[in-house]
Image 1 (spheres, one colour):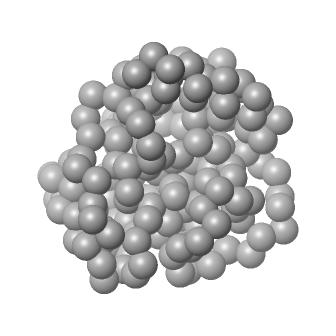
Image 2 (tube, rainbow, N blue to C red; image 1 turned 45 degrees about the vertical axis):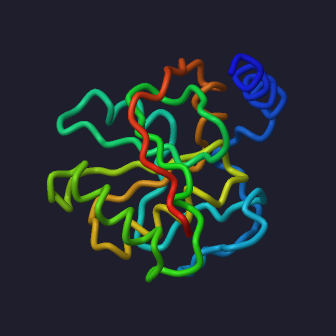
Length: 176
């Protein structure tokens, strides 16, 4: 466990140059799930969602209702943004009609208590992670109206001096 946390910390520190949440890689947004090469440069926006920067996220965390934060980074348990709900596997899958989508629908319904206007923020390691992009697309497809993609993710949070906390809530990884 300690080795996994140290490994994540080293990866995040050495990835500091990639924490630029505004870097434009020239990748066009797409409305379909990306199913291969999930650790690659991402577009700057997700169709149907809003891209949120670190400063905006910090401000939104001081307002009511607070956004629900969803960490979709896979792998071993890790520290994340304070209050984040861990949804490993939510950015994977093959289509918007798969088991991952069904489980995400149930999870978001429970987390929001059915309020489809509740702000939802999806993130993963950083701007070269398609998992949060896909999860945001999934939430948009489910009809949520306040979907935010935190493209900078954990890397940008740390680069801006943010602290991480243990994950307290996690779902069971879907089979898809």
